[in-house]
Image (cartoon, rainbow, N blue to C red; front, side):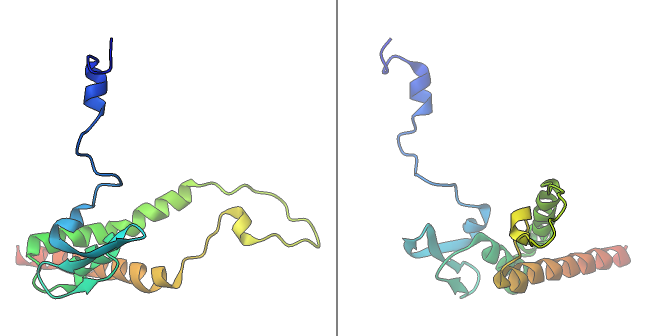
Length: 150
């Protein structure tokens, strides 16, 4: 059986498939701008003038959830939940990785990075954790307001 007659090879080959990862859903609310550099393109919000030269999904999600005042309420709530739960999934992954327990040898101090601890970057601390906490507060306030209206 030749390759042209084999139905499985026809199914596996996609004629117009683009290389790389599928863009995240957040890209539906942004316009891609500029040339692709190091795997990233710039982005511009469809609701306001906010833009970035390197469109990172986490920053875009945080913008829609927390900063953009023209975002529709349903979109804002959706991305608030995404930003709020983002840190929990990372924490669960870290807890799942077991660190081997060994006694330290006297006189020889081991590097902490050898045991899997990788301290967060300043950008992670100043943006991601801050955005997550702000999303937590906003979601809790929203739920409290809904509860008091009933």
